[in-house]
Each structure stands twice: as C-alpha cells, then as structure tokens.
Length: 304
Image (cartoon, rainbow, N blue to C red; front, side, top):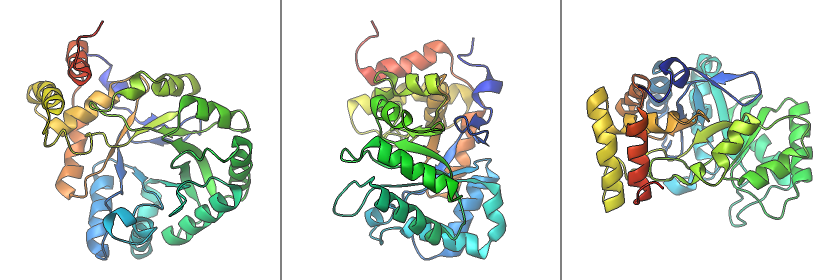
C-alpha cells in the first residue's frame, strides 16, 4: 500500500489560497551566479523543460558566492531580457528583508525599497510571490501588513509569504492582513525534521499555506553523507531509491512531498543533469513503512 495517492502526491500545488498553482518541485537560485548568460539560461530552461515552473530566488543571493548583493536576481533579469518569452513559463518567487550589516529589516521603508530594487534587477513589473526572508523582531506585524497591502495595491507583488518564521510569527502577521498569506518557507528534509514537530507543517495545513522546503538534501549531506546520522538516513532512502529505480536525491524529494501538507522541495543544484534528475521524484510513492523508516533513522531513536 502506498502512503499517498500518486495522482494527489504528484499533482500541481496550490500557492496558498491565491488561485495560482505551481509544480510540485521548485528550483532555487542560491548558487545561481556568474556572467555567462547563455549558461544561466540553460539552467532556467532545464528546470522549465523538466516541468518545474516555480523559480525561487532572493535579493541576498550573491554575497555567499563572492558576488554583489542582488547578483542572482540580476543574472535572472539578464536571462529574461535576452529571452523574454521565458517569463510567461514560470511563477517568480523572491525574498527580501535581509539588509547587509543589520542584518534583518522588515520596516516599511526598507521592505518597499527592497521590492522595488528586486523589480528593477529582475526587469519585471510584478513579482508573483514575495517573501520576508527572516523574521525581524523589531518590526511590528501591523507595519509589515500595511507594507504588503500597499505593494499589492500598487500591483508590484501578487502574493506574499514568509520564510523561516515560527507558527506564532505567521499568526501574528496574518492577524493584521486582509488577505491570506500564500506560503511558508522552512528548512525541511529527511535530516531537518523539525517542521514535523514544531507546528510549521500543521499550521500550513490549517491555514492552507504552500510549503516551500529549502535545503531538501540536507545541505548536500544526503548526497555525500559523512556522519552516522546522515549515513543511516541515506541508507533508508537508498532502499526506496533502488526499489523505485531513482536516485537517492529523488527519494529524498519524494519523502518530503509525501507529507499531507504537500511540501514543495526547492531543488538547489546548478547542474543541468541534476535539475533534470529531480523529476524522478514524481515517478513513485513511499509506503508508510518506508517513510517511517527514514524518519526513525533521522530521529536516531525508535518512534514511541
């Protein structure tokens, strides 16, 4: 018996209550870098041709790669400027609220300037999904809500979400918004299982939030396990991968997608072959014993 109906598990995901739907996998641009626009376009097209039509970036993607703030957005903007037809093929998600040297700023003036800067770098008139990257403890949720309302009324952002926020922070912000948040973006993988227990996934189900799971391969540890816990989890994933004829990475994505919150793993690879490989996750489902075997390995102790 499979854990989920394949038709449901692998169907398109609702982007919250927005009415928009996206692919069950996303492609992330944390390591999207360089000056080669042709090579960058090849990565974008690999994702789109593989059925991934949710592209996730952020204004802070750049400095970690030795590039300027906003570099990943700017590179995507150059791709879209050279191939405008690509823009109609995907849902564009980006994030902001991290200010170099601060580090977090969700004040109205800064968020407004951050969105406008992203629009300029991307060369688009509207962002489909804009998320606060990290919570700013000094920003009142009412101020954030007013900012969201204004940006939406101006047509600069269609939908809003948050990343790395607790359920309580989500609820506090939602209390001041006249429209529902569309998404939450937590770290979630077979090695980062906290969302199963801290209320993030339960709240997503309750409120109808789309879940965008970042670092679904545990920061690469599932591809190259070096510690006992990673090795144990990878071994359980490998059993499913061998049974289904897919890669261990695809098995990890499948494990994430099996949860009833219907999380969307964000594929982070910047290699065409590995982006294409991700679609293998849509060819099989987990049984309950298989899924819980991975969870037990991640916990390191038997389930109660």
